[in-house]
Length: 433
Image 1: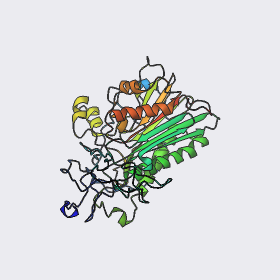
Image 2: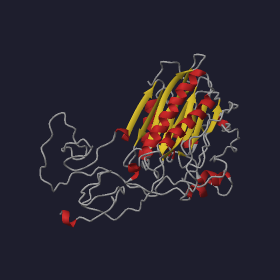
Image 3: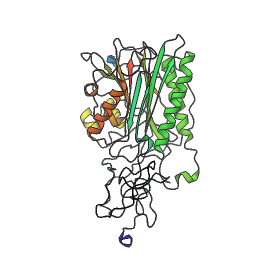
Image 4: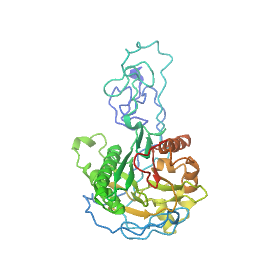
Protein backbone atom coordinates (compact mmCIF):
# COMPACT_ATOMS: atom_id res chain seq x y z
CA UNK A 1 0.00 0.00 0.00
CA UNK A 2 1.09 3.61 -0.50
CA UNK A 3 1.48 4.13 3.25
CA UNK A 4 3.99 1.27 3.37
CA UNK A 5 6.17 2.55 0.52
CA UNK A 6 9.69 3.58 1.50
CA UNK A 7 10.22 7.32 1.68
CA UNK A 8 13.07 8.00 -0.72
CA UNK A 9 14.71 11.24 -1.67
CA UNK A 10 16.16 9.86 -4.91
CA UNK A 11 15.38 7.03 -7.31
CA UNK A 12 17.38 3.90 -6.35
CA UNK A 13 17.84 3.15 -10.03
CA UNK A 14 18.99 6.45 -11.60
CA UNK A 15 19.13 8.81 -8.53
CA UNK A 16 16.62 11.28 -9.95
CA UNK A 17 15.21 13.48 -7.13
CA UNK A 18 11.85 12.22 -5.87
CA UNK A 19 8.91 13.94 -4.23
CA UNK A 20 6.75 12.56 -1.46
CA UNK A 21 4.13 10.18 -2.80
CA UNK A 22 5.89 9.38 -6.10
CA UNK A 23 5.06 5.87 -7.29
CA UNK A 24 7.36 5.89 -10.30
CA UNK A 25 10.61 7.66 -11.08
CA UNK A 26 10.06 10.65 -13.32
CA UNK A 27 13.31 10.01 -15.23
CA UNK A 28 13.48 6.26 -15.86
CA UNK A 29 10.03 5.03 -14.82
CA UNK A 30 11.37 2.82 -12.02
CA UNK A 31 8.62 1.19 -9.93
CA UNK A 32 9.11 2.60 -6.43
CA UNK A 33 6.60 0.27 -4.76
CA UNK A 34 9.15 -2.56 -4.59
CA UNK A 35 12.52 -0.97 -3.91
CA UNK A 36 15.53 -3.32 -3.87
CA UNK A 37 18.79 -2.69 -2.08
CA UNK A 38 20.40 0.54 -3.20
CA UNK A 39 22.69 -0.21 -6.18
CA UNK A 40 26.37 0.51 -5.90
CA UNK A 41 26.29 3.00 -8.73
CA UNK A 42 26.79 6.67 -8.11
CA UNK A 43 27.95 9.35 -10.52
CA UNK A 44 31.64 10.05 -10.28
CA UNK A 45 33.01 13.55 -10.26
CA UNK A 46 35.79 15.32 -12.05
CA UNK A 47 38.86 16.09 -10.03
CA UNK A 48 39.40 19.45 -11.66
CA UNK A 49 40.36 22.57 -9.82
CA UNK A 50 40.99 24.72 -12.86
CA UNK A 51 38.80 27.74 -13.51
CA UNK A 52 36.26 27.43 -16.33
CA UNK A 53 37.69 28.14 -19.75
CA UNK A 54 36.11 30.43 -22.26
CA UNK A 55 35.91 30.20 -26.03
CA UNK A 56 39.27 29.30 -27.49
CA UNK A 57 40.87 31.28 -30.29
CA UNK A 58 41.42 29.61 -33.60
CA UNK A 59 45.13 29.05 -34.14
CA UNK A 60 46.09 28.34 -37.76
CA UNK A 61 48.07 25.18 -38.32
CA UNK A 62 49.58 24.24 -41.69
CA UNK A 63 48.61 20.92 -43.28
CA UNK A 64 50.81 18.12 -42.08
CA UNK A 65 52.65 15.50 -44.06
CA UNK A 66 50.42 12.56 -44.89
CA UNK A 67 51.12 8.97 -43.87
CA UNK A 68 49.98 5.44 -44.42
CA UNK A 69 47.40 4.25 -41.86
CA UNK A 70 49.46 1.18 -41.09
CA UNK A 71 52.27 3.44 -39.94
CA UNK A 72 50.13 5.05 -37.22
CA UNK A 73 52.34 8.10 -37.62
CA UNK A 74 50.09 11.09 -38.16
CA UNK A 75 51.02 14.63 -37.24
CA UNK A 76 48.93 16.42 -34.64
CA UNK A 77 47.51 19.84 -35.33
CA UNK A 78 49.89 21.30 -32.79
CA UNK A 79 52.85 20.04 -34.77
CA UNK A 80 53.80 17.33 -32.27
CA UNK A 81 54.77 13.87 -33.43
CA UNK A 82 52.70 11.13 -31.78
CA UNK A 83 54.61 8.44 -29.89
CA UNK A 84 55.71 5.28 -31.78
CA UNK A 85 53.00 2.84 -32.74
CA UNK A 86 52.28 -0.22 -30.68
CA UNK A 87 49.43 -2.35 -29.37
CA UNK A 88 48.12 0.63 -27.41
CA UNK A 89 48.97 4.17 -28.45
CA UNK A 90 48.54 6.79 -25.75
CA UNK A 91 48.69 10.54 -25.71
CA UNK A 92 51.91 12.00 -24.35
CA UNK A 93 51.75 13.01 -20.73
CA UNK A 94 50.90 16.70 -20.61
CA UNK A 95 50.22 19.05 -17.70
CA UNK A 96 46.52 18.75 -17.02
CA UNK A 97 44.59 19.73 -13.95
CA UNK A 98 42.92 16.38 -13.45
CA UNK A 99 40.79 13.68 -14.93
CA UNK A 100 37.09 13.18 -15.30
CA UNK A 101 35.57 9.81 -14.52
CA UNK A 102 33.00 9.00 -17.16
CA UNK A 103 32.12 5.40 -16.36
CA UNK A 104 30.41 3.65 -13.48
CA UNK A 105 31.98 0.33 -12.45
CA UNK A 106 28.63 -1.44 -12.20
CA UNK A 107 26.01 0.47 -14.22
CA UNK A 108 22.34 -0.12 -13.55
CA UNK A 109 20.27 -2.04 -16.04
CA UNK A 110 17.22 -0.17 -17.25
CA UNK A 111 14.77 -2.76 -18.54
CA UNK A 112 11.06 -2.38 -19.09
CA UNK A 113 9.15 -4.15 -16.35
CA UNK A 114 6.33 -6.45 -17.44
CA UNK A 115 2.80 -5.67 -16.20
CA UNK A 116 1.91 -7.22 -12.85
CA UNK A 117 -0.09 -10.42 -13.52
CA UNK A 118 -1.89 -9.97 -10.18
CA UNK A 119 -3.61 -6.87 -11.49
CA UNK A 120 -7.01 -7.40 -13.07
CA UNK A 121 -7.75 -6.79 -16.73
CA UNK A 122 -6.77 -3.13 -16.43
CA UNK A 123 -7.88 -0.30 -18.65
CA UNK A 124 -9.39 -1.04 -22.06
CA UNK A 125 -7.16 -0.95 -25.11
CA UNK A 126 -6.84 2.65 -26.35
CA UNK A 127 -8.52 3.63 -29.59
CA UNK A 128 -6.69 3.14 -32.87
CA UNK A 129 -4.14 5.86 -33.49
CA UNK A 130 -3.41 6.36 -29.79
CA UNK A 131 0.20 5.84 -28.75
CA UNK A 132 0.34 2.66 -26.67
CA UNK A 133 2.88 1.88 -23.94
CA UNK A 134 5.70 -0.42 -25.05
CA UNK A 135 5.77 -2.06 -21.59
CA UNK A 136 2.19 -2.99 -20.74
CA UNK A 137 0.82 -2.71 -24.29
CA UNK A 138 -2.42 -1.32 -22.91
CA UNK A 139 -1.92 2.10 -21.34
CA UNK A 140 -2.09 5.35 -23.25
CA UNK A 141 1.12 7.39 -23.37
CA UNK A 142 0.58 10.94 -22.14
CA UNK A 143 2.17 14.10 -23.52
CA UNK A 144 5.08 13.79 -21.09
CA UNK A 145 6.11 10.41 -22.53
CA UNK A 146 4.87 8.22 -19.67
CA UNK A 147 2.24 5.47 -19.61
CA UNK A 148 -0.97 6.42 -17.79
CA UNK A 149 -1.44 2.77 -16.83
CA UNK A 150 1.94 1.46 -15.62
CA UNK A 151 3.94 4.69 -15.43
CA UNK A 152 6.85 3.57 -17.59
CA UNK A 153 8.87 6.13 -19.51
CA UNK A 154 8.69 5.46 -23.24
CA UNK A 155 11.69 5.12 -25.57
CA UNK A 156 13.15 8.47 -26.57
CA UNK A 157 13.87 9.52 -30.14
CA UNK A 158 17.61 9.19 -29.56
CA UNK A 159 17.42 5.69 -28.06
CA UNK A 160 18.19 4.25 -31.49
CA UNK A 161 19.20 6.33 -34.50
CA UNK A 162 20.24 5.33 -38.00
CA UNK A 163 21.24 7.54 -40.92
CA UNK A 164 22.65 7.25 -44.42
CA UNK A 165 24.22 10.19 -46.24
CA UNK A 166 25.25 9.15 -49.72
CA UNK A 167 27.94 6.48 -49.40
CA UNK A 168 28.36 6.76 -45.61
CA UNK A 169 26.19 5.69 -42.67
CA UNK A 170 25.99 5.68 -38.87
CA UNK A 171 24.02 3.95 -36.13
CA UNK A 172 23.68 4.95 -32.48
CA UNK A 173 21.97 2.99 -29.70
CA UNK A 174 21.20 3.61 -26.03
CA UNK A 175 22.65 0.23 -25.06
CA UNK A 176 21.29 -2.11 -22.42
CA UNK A 177 22.35 -0.40 -19.20
CA UNK A 178 21.66 3.32 -19.64
CA UNK A 179 18.30 5.07 -19.40
CA UNK A 180 19.13 7.49 -22.22
CA UNK A 181 21.50 7.86 -25.17
CA UNK A 182 24.14 10.50 -24.52
CA UNK A 183 25.97 9.91 -27.82
CA UNK A 184 25.35 11.98 -30.95
CA UNK A 185 26.62 11.93 -34.51
CA UNK A 186 26.43 14.00 -37.67
CA UNK A 187 27.20 12.86 -41.21
CA UNK A 188 27.97 15.11 -44.16
CA UNK A 189 28.96 15.18 -47.81
CA UNK A 190 30.68 18.05 -49.57
CA UNK A 191 32.47 18.98 -52.78
CA UNK A 192 36.04 20.27 -52.82
CA UNK A 193 37.02 23.22 -55.05
CA UNK A 194 38.39 20.86 -57.69
CA UNK A 195 35.01 19.12 -57.92
CA UNK A 196 36.07 15.97 -56.09
CA UNK A 197 33.76 14.59 -53.36
CA UNK A 198 34.42 14.58 -49.64
CA UNK A 199 32.55 12.83 -46.84
CA UNK A 200 32.81 13.25 -43.10
CA UNK A 201 31.44 11.93 -39.83
CA UNK A 202 31.54 13.50 -36.37
CA UNK A 203 30.76 11.37 -33.29
CA UNK A 204 30.43 12.79 -29.77
CA UNK A 205 30.06 11.01 -26.43
CA UNK A 206 28.47 12.94 -23.57
CA UNK A 207 30.35 12.84 -20.27
CA UNK A 208 27.93 11.15 -17.87
CA UNK A 209 29.37 12.78 -14.75
CA UNK A 210 28.45 16.22 -16.12
CA UNK A 211 25.06 17.84 -16.39
CA UNK A 212 23.19 17.65 -19.73
CA UNK A 213 25.67 15.31 -21.45
CA UNK A 214 23.17 14.54 -24.20
CA UNK A 215 22.80 18.24 -25.00
CA UNK A 216 26.59 18.65 -25.05
CA UNK A 217 27.16 15.83 -27.54
CA UNK A 218 24.37 17.01 -29.82
CA UNK A 219 25.57 20.63 -29.81
CA UNK A 220 29.18 19.61 -30.47
CA UNK A 221 28.40 17.28 -33.37
CA UNK A 222 26.17 19.82 -35.08
CA UNK A 223 28.62 22.71 -34.65
CA UNK A 224 31.51 20.65 -36.00
CA UNK A 225 29.50 19.55 -39.01
CA UNK A 226 28.44 23.11 -39.80
CA UNK A 227 32.08 24.21 -39.68
CA UNK A 228 33.18 21.44 -42.04
CA UNK A 229 30.38 22.14 -44.52
CA UNK A 230 31.48 25.77 -44.60
CA UNK A 231 35.25 25.19 -44.80
CA UNK A 232 35.72 22.29 -47.22
CA UNK A 233 34.10 23.85 -50.33
CA UNK A 234 36.21 26.98 -49.81
CA UNK A 235 39.45 25.06 -50.21
CA UNK A 236 40.49 24.84 -46.56
CA UNK A 237 42.85 21.92 -46.16
CA UNK A 238 40.87 19.03 -44.60
CA UNK A 239 43.22 18.78 -41.63
CA UNK A 240 42.89 22.49 -40.92
CA UNK A 241 39.13 22.23 -41.43
CA UNK A 242 38.97 19.43 -38.84
CA UNK A 243 40.94 21.53 -36.35
CA UNK A 244 38.55 24.45 -36.84
CA UNK A 245 35.56 22.14 -36.51
CA UNK A 246 36.73 20.93 -33.09
CA UNK A 247 37.21 24.54 -31.99
CA UNK A 248 33.66 25.32 -33.12
CA UNK A 249 32.36 22.28 -31.25
CA UNK A 250 34.16 23.41 -28.11
CA UNK A 251 32.55 26.83 -28.31
CA UNK A 252 29.11 25.25 -28.71
CA UNK A 253 29.57 23.12 -25.59
CA UNK A 254 31.01 26.04 -23.61
CA UNK A 255 27.91 28.08 -24.42
CA UNK A 256 25.73 25.50 -22.67
CA UNK A 257 27.32 26.42 -19.36
CA UNK A 258 25.67 29.85 -19.54
CA UNK A 259 22.33 28.38 -18.50
CA UNK A 260 19.62 29.70 -16.18
CA UNK A 261 20.08 28.93 -12.52
CA UNK A 262 16.89 26.85 -12.59
CA UNK A 263 18.47 24.42 -15.06
CA UNK A 264 20.55 22.87 -12.29
CA UNK A 265 18.05 22.96 -9.45
CA UNK A 266 17.78 19.16 -9.42
CA UNK A 267 21.53 18.54 -9.87
CA UNK A 268 23.29 21.54 -8.31
CA UNK A 269 26.63 19.81 -7.74
CA UNK A 270 27.33 18.51 -11.23
CA UNK A 271 29.88 19.91 -13.62
CA UNK A 272 29.28 21.99 -16.73
CA UNK A 273 28.04 20.13 -19.83
CA UNK A 274 30.86 18.14 -21.43
CA UNK A 275 31.55 15.58 -24.14
CA UNK A 276 34.29 13.99 -26.19
CA UNK A 277 34.57 14.36 -29.96
CA UNK A 278 36.06 12.37 -32.81
CA UNK A 279 35.71 12.90 -36.54
CA UNK A 280 37.04 11.86 -39.91
CA UNK A 281 37.12 13.41 -43.38
CA UNK A 282 37.55 11.17 -46.42
CA UNK A 283 38.45 12.41 -49.91
CA UNK A 284 39.52 10.45 -53.00
CA UNK A 285 43.14 10.50 -51.82
CA UNK A 286 43.26 11.70 -48.20
CA UNK A 287 42.04 10.49 -44.83
CA UNK A 288 41.95 13.00 -41.95
CA UNK A 289 41.07 12.34 -38.32
CA UNK A 290 40.58 14.67 -35.35
CA UNK A 291 39.64 14.11 -31.75
CA UNK A 292 39.55 15.18 -28.11
CA UNK A 293 38.81 12.43 -25.59
CA UNK A 294 38.68 8.65 -25.86
CA UNK A 295 36.44 8.01 -28.86
CA UNK A 296 38.37 6.44 -31.72
CA UNK A 297 38.92 6.01 -35.46
CA UNK A 298 39.90 2.64 -36.93
CA UNK A 299 41.12 1.77 -40.43
CA UNK A 300 40.08 -1.60 -41.88
CA UNK A 301 41.37 -2.37 -45.39
CA UNK A 302 39.14 -4.23 -47.85
CA UNK A 303 41.94 -6.74 -48.37
CA UNK A 304 42.00 -8.40 -44.97
CA UNK A 305 45.49 -9.73 -45.60
CA UNK A 306 46.62 -6.15 -44.98
CA UNK A 307 46.80 -5.02 -41.35
CA UNK A 308 44.09 -2.82 -39.83
CA UNK A 309 45.10 0.11 -37.65
CA UNK A 310 43.87 2.46 -34.97
CA UNK A 311 44.38 6.07 -36.06
CA UNK A 312 43.72 7.96 -32.80
CA UNK A 313 45.29 8.11 -29.36
CA UNK A 314 43.08 8.21 -26.27
CA UNK A 315 43.06 11.18 -23.94
CA UNK A 316 42.76 8.85 -20.95
CA UNK A 317 44.52 7.95 -17.74
CA UNK A 318 45.42 4.47 -18.97
CA UNK A 319 46.86 5.74 -22.23
CA UNK A 320 49.02 8.26 -20.40
CA UNK A 321 50.33 5.62 -18.00
CA UNK A 322 51.30 3.36 -20.92
CA UNK A 323 52.85 6.21 -22.94
CA UNK A 324 54.89 7.34 -19.93
CA UNK A 325 56.16 3.83 -19.34
CA UNK A 326 54.72 3.74 -15.83
CA UNK A 327 52.52 0.70 -16.52
CA UNK A 328 52.18 -1.91 -19.19
CA UNK A 329 48.97 -2.23 -21.17
CA UNK A 330 47.47 -5.00 -19.03
CA UNK A 331 48.17 -3.17 -15.77
CA UNK A 332 46.84 0.17 -16.98
CA UNK A 333 43.59 -1.13 -18.40
CA UNK A 334 42.94 -3.33 -15.38
CA UNK A 335 43.04 -0.28 -13.12
CA UNK A 336 39.72 1.25 -12.08
CA UNK A 337 41.00 4.61 -13.36
CA UNK A 338 41.64 3.26 -16.87
CA UNK A 339 38.74 5.04 -18.55
CA UNK A 340 39.14 8.35 -16.74
CA UNK A 341 39.44 10.87 -19.56
CA UNK A 342 42.07 13.60 -19.52
CA UNK A 343 40.66 15.62 -22.40
CA UNK A 344 37.10 16.74 -23.20
CA UNK A 345 35.05 19.63 -24.53
CA UNK A 346 33.38 21.80 -21.90
CA UNK A 347 33.61 25.01 -19.96
CA UNK A 348 35.48 23.29 -17.11
CA UNK A 349 38.09 21.65 -19.36
CA UNK A 350 41.61 22.69 -18.44
CA UNK A 351 42.59 23.54 -22.00
CA UNK A 352 41.49 22.81 -25.54
CA UNK A 353 44.06 20.61 -27.26
CA UNK A 354 42.61 19.26 -30.54
CA UNK A 355 44.49 16.39 -32.11
CA UNK A 356 44.42 15.98 -35.89
CA UNK A 357 46.31 13.73 -38.28
CA UNK A 358 46.38 13.07 -42.03
CA UNK A 359 46.89 9.73 -43.76
CA UNK A 360 47.13 8.62 -47.38
CA UNK A 361 46.04 4.99 -47.65
CA UNK A 362 47.46 3.05 -50.58
CA UNK A 363 44.50 0.68 -50.84
CA UNK A 364 40.70 0.76 -50.37
CA UNK A 365 39.04 0.13 -47.04
CA UNK A 366 36.61 1.56 -44.51
CA UNK A 367 37.01 4.13 -41.76
CA UNK A 368 35.19 3.45 -38.48
CA UNK A 369 34.45 6.43 -36.20
CA UNK A 370 33.13 5.20 -32.85
CA UNK A 371 32.62 5.78 -29.15
CA UNK A 372 34.01 3.55 -26.42
CA UNK A 373 30.63 1.83 -26.24
CA UNK A 374 31.84 -0.11 -29.29
CA UNK A 375 35.60 -0.38 -28.85
CA UNK A 376 35.20 -1.68 -25.30
CA UNK A 377 34.15 -4.90 -27.04
CA UNK A 378 36.77 -4.79 -29.81
CA UNK A 379 39.68 -2.73 -28.53
CA UNK A 380 42.55 -3.94 -30.69
CA UNK A 381 42.49 -3.11 -34.38
CA UNK A 382 42.54 -6.82 -35.24
CA UNK A 383 39.51 -7.42 -33.02
CA UNK A 384 37.62 -4.58 -34.63
CA UNK A 385 38.46 -5.83 -38.11
CA UNK A 386 37.11 -9.28 -37.24
CA UNK A 387 33.74 -7.75 -36.39
CA UNK A 388 33.53 -5.81 -39.68
CA UNK A 389 31.67 -7.55 -42.56
CA UNK A 390 33.70 -8.29 -45.67
CA UNK A 391 31.43 -6.08 -47.81
CA UNK A 392 31.63 -3.11 -45.45
CA UNK A 393 32.61 -0.59 -48.13
CA UNK A 394 29.59 -1.48 -50.25
CA UNK A 395 27.12 -1.70 -47.33
CA UNK A 396 28.05 0.92 -44.69
CA UNK A 397 24.63 1.00 -42.98
CA UNK A 398 24.55 -2.78 -42.69
CA UNK A 399 28.09 -2.66 -41.29
CA UNK A 400 27.17 -0.04 -38.70
CA UNK A 401 24.21 -2.17 -37.60
CA UNK A 402 26.41 -5.24 -37.30
CA UNK A 403 28.95 -3.39 -35.16
CA UNK A 404 26.31 -1.95 -32.84
CA UNK A 405 24.90 -5.46 -32.53
CA UNK A 406 28.37 -6.72 -31.65
CA UNK A 407 28.49 -4.27 -28.72
CA UNK A 408 24.97 -5.15 -27.57
CA UNK A 409 25.74 -8.87 -27.75
CA UNK A 410 28.83 -8.20 -25.66
CA UNK A 411 26.75 -6.65 -22.88
CA UNK A 412 25.82 -3.16 -24.10
CA UNK A 413 27.13 -1.53 -20.92
CA UNK A 414 27.38 1.91 -22.57
CA UNK A 415 25.77 3.95 -25.32
CA UNK A 416 27.24 2.77 -28.62
CA UNK A 417 27.74 4.79 -31.80
CA UNK A 418 29.66 4.03 -34.99
CA UNK A 419 29.94 5.72 -38.37
CA UNK A 420 31.26 3.89 -41.44
CA UNK A 421 33.00 5.76 -44.29
CA UNK A 422 34.39 3.94 -47.34
CA UNK A 423 37.83 5.01 -48.61
CA UNK A 424 38.36 6.38 -51.16
CA UNK A 425 35.21 8.45 -51.33
CA UNK A 426 32.93 6.85 -53.93
CA UNK A 427 31.66 9.00 -56.81
CA UNK A 428 28.69 11.17 -55.94
CA UNK A 429 25.42 9.32 -56.05
CA UNK A 430 26.85 6.05 -54.73
CA UNK A 431 25.27 4.64 -51.59
CA UNK A 432 24.61 1.48 -49.64
CA UNK A 433 23.73 -1.64 -51.50
